[in-house]
Image (cartoon, rainbow, N blue to C red):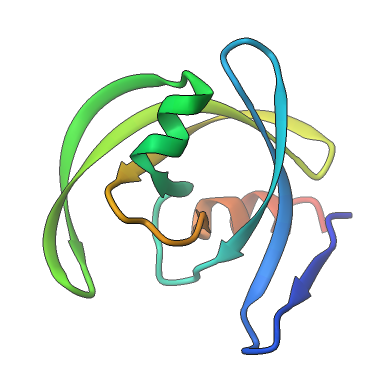
Length: 110
């Protein structure tokens, strides 16, 4: 079962592996955001460095208002399972966010 940890502010993080297009694996700590309804959100530069495939642009409503984001498809390794997932890319995304679909995936294994 996947293990998470709380930081000093009470935020919950999970360790996941991002699999780049060239097959290399990058282990990161992703912040669980229960208000985020997509799978994963990252900064565009981070996604570009993984070589994940661009799908389309999408307008989304955020806490700061409406904004434009890029949608990519990539591969993650989460709790012993390799998954192909959509990822939202934006500018100045400070944390890698793990959304509700990831939580639903984990819940199905508990």
